Length: 149
Length: 277
Image 1 (cartoon, chains in turn cyan, orange):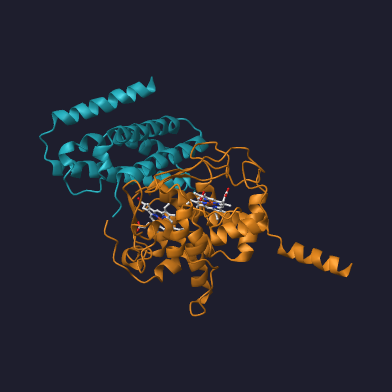
Image 2 (image 1 turned 135 degrees about the vertical axis):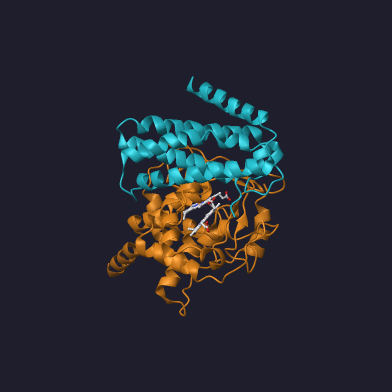
């Protein structure tokens, strides 16, 4: 049920992307990079809390988890085929391995949505574990689809 | 009688310390390659898929199970595997098992690692055969590769370098096998000479960054340390999973002195330009 909800969400964002295909490829790249930058901004402090490097603050976690939940749905229509030739850190697999790319995208969205849900409960251990799961989803994504440097 | 006593004493001395071995196993990242990548997998029971240009390797079961694991091995078998990359039956191991780095682990540490592996609960999970592209399925080819690229021998401290840098060099080059991912390889899969730690392309299309001061000097010790403890950069960027795993299993588990020594050693490397991707 949940899964199909996200699948529809993903299909819709992709559809919007198609409708906006006139946007210049270099702009699309800039926008999707902006989403990643903000994901870093709101995830970084959570990662530090999960690993005990910063004091746990349930309010910040809840707020950031909400931001991340929205952000996790934003980058994907930026990976339009028109951006294939643009200078970026995206690996060719983004465009050549569509099934794997979509799977990784929905994994990130699912884990982030779960984080938003648990962040509204009071279970600090569960929240920290779920922050770890989101981190793994980001890392798995970077492993296969981003060129470092 | 006296001879018997003396023999007993020397056996007791030679025996490894499992507690120390546990720490060394973390410094060597053994658990990653020898444990399946799913929640709840039995540690060290094997099954991790390692994708390389030559095919997919599966880390074997190294628990002390007599059939499924290495329960019938002697300490000498283990030391030979790690030091020389040779199986008890004499066949060569593929360098997907990073023995080109582990060969540098000193004898006492190998004994402690062995004692630790012996202390693990045995698992009956069968090791999965590797799935390699033709003709790499032939182990005898590894012999030629070793002749070209493998220099066996344990780490010898450089007297001109001081204890801290030597410790760092040992952690990076022997146990940590950081060069297995951060040193570029030639078309035969051997490390490129003179390009140590300059960054590399990795199977699957991604790459690892340059660890020499050319790149690392842009970060202060605090930033490098935080990254090696958390896998997250100050701007919240999350490391690719292969490095994130090194952080979880190895660098975040080191004692503060060892982590400092490791960073000091990276800072002492000759600066090299980035490897072109």
